[in-house]
Image (cartoon, rainbow, N blue to C red; front, side, top):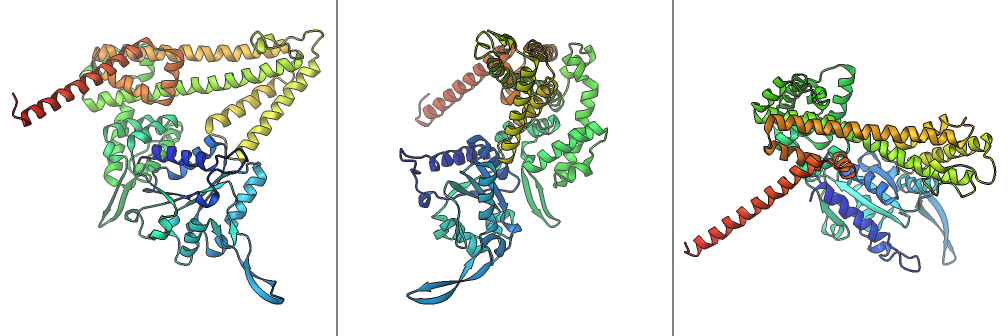
Length: 520
């Protein structure tokens, strides 16, 4: 299965394990809650999906790479304790609490979240002295004499032996006590994530053309050569920063992340062309509605790789705009809800009935400047408190954190407001800015369609462009919320083409059957 399906399976497992009956007891008792064993190649995203799952399920997460630990840190240190048995006194060896188990209790104390995931990475790469402890951990959910707290689900991850010489095979007794998921690298599943995380357009468009370069591991006389999903994501980050610093990433820089020389050189060459196309086609001018006739003509006669790269450039720039619109919409929506509640407090519950912040007038008395300032300050403190709490609990994704920081800043600047009219006016400015940004982005999308239609007419390139818009998280959100007539036009063409292809395939199947039966 791919990493996306593995994430769904783990989420379903967690929901099932944490489901309680009418008496508040777990429907599946702890002894029947098999640990999840996630096996897959390195760098495919196993650790990352655990963070996403914890946030989406609103539970805690404690992560450990077990190869970094000794037997003592995992199990605890032995000490002698005196005990009475049958009237006689004996010295008994016990263990201090495991560092790992203690971390779970500390996380519960700090966050107040009583349920979560204990994630142990590289579980099949432990030392010989640690191996029995790992088997005990998977079978009995204990380290030494300390048990994993109820409500905490064990997920372990490991690499198959072809990727790591240090792995140890699990015996049948252990495997019969875990829920095993085998993960394989899948570019299309990763591509959805890449769009959501705004990976560099050069990386996405290159891998669309060279999908077999997405994940490669080969053992040669010179050592192991590899290109992984983790490598592409980290390379994307350095490309963004290099661009802002005015630096160029050559084959040597690429090779520091994509440790497969042939692929690194190939991508470095593509990256050079990618930047050249950006200059030649003047993408920002295209999206401003001012493409040159030379650019249209050049793209019309270009080879497939060049056409694809230019569409990648357009999509990359549009994705930046779609992402900005998304963040602005999340911010304004959150701000609206908070100001609506604040307006209701100031007006004794009467405000907000006709539209939230726009109706925050005091009825039956005057709202004082001190009360407005106090309410704004209190709201800012609440946002700060929630942000820190959620950050400590690992419940914040990038969007939530950015939105929280912006809310704190916005509210802080309005703490000197003398009345709620000033707050309403400031909110109106934020809402207008959001709408202006949406209108500007919609115009850029139309300009992209204009340019591609001028170069290709209504050819298959437009269908491909629409396909990529559908695949992107932010582009799909933008079109769903704001519409785009030409997107819908070519999307209908895409659906028609798929139906036509399916019909042709069925006709060919029927012909093959008729030929096999001796019919003409």
